[in-house]
Image (cartoon, rainbow, N blue to C red; front, side, top):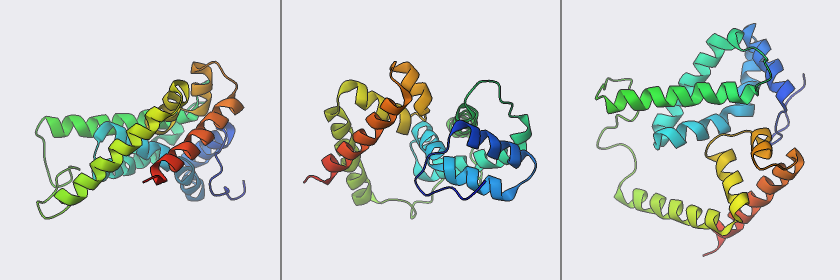
Length: 190
């Protein structure tokens, strides 16, 4: 398999092939799988944890689990992205539960020293940007906004979204591409 083009989404068979190669300890396949899926898995982790540093740590743990358990993946008609997203989501939930139970040790994500992380001004700016993004998402047609949220916040696959909205896969891809363009334009307005 050749290099993955930057920005090109991999199809189901390509991801399944990479998982099979990762099961054989193929580091190049693991790197390609990471490149192809890390953004989506990070989005899933961030959605659960609501903390960027914790989500990054959870995603790293997720990829360790993927490396160790790739041989357990079986192509059974389910999307390989569903398998990967489940690992990321469960890892993030485990971290969230550990934090809520008060279990804190040196390796617990979310444990931040007072001097580290964003200050009040940075948090205010981030909250403002988040409000702007939500406002921009609300400007999209209801079904388009729901599809964008599903793909980029909930980690749903394009195929799952196409099925949920009863539209062809290419139509879903168009919705998402146009939705992102609209969001970019909205966010760039003053």
